Image (cartoon, rainbow, N blue to C red; front, side):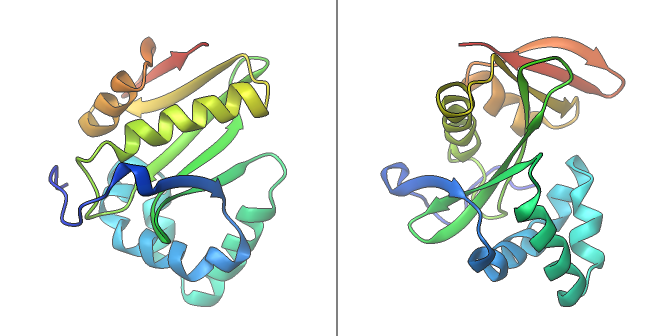
Amino acid sequence: MSETADKLVNRRDMYMRPLQKRDFFEFRKAAIESTETNYEYLPLGEMFENLNIFEFSKGYASFVEDENFDHWGVFHRNQLVGHIGFSFALGPFGAELLGWVRNGYHGQGIGEISLQTACAIAFNQKMFNYVELRIKQSNKPSRRAAEKAGFTPVLKVGSSTLVGFEP
């Protein structure tokens, strides 16, 4: 995985919003471009790699409409540069975040900014009491982003570390 950015991002031009059906083609393009890193660190990579456009479309529609999981796009201007998903955490009143940064945009603090923004959404809009991430020990970029965003390691589970954040 590249630690350097191929495409420079101005942080002032970044924003997050819930993904919508109209984001399908941009999300698919970003996901396919990022298959290698998503496959290495997330169970999503294989899904992105093996689906034809019709299967991907069906999966994306259910993905966006799932009431138990919110999907937010991380945008630089109108370009999708990452994804953050909210689901319920292991404990009560908590959120688990899952996310990735599009290939070509690593090493610019997008993960850190996305996590900080997602925490603000989780606490201020969704009224969660804490936020957790599960990060593989081998995923050094995500571990750095989580630490910079204020998360602290809580528990090691197999090859992953559970990290948490409270307001």
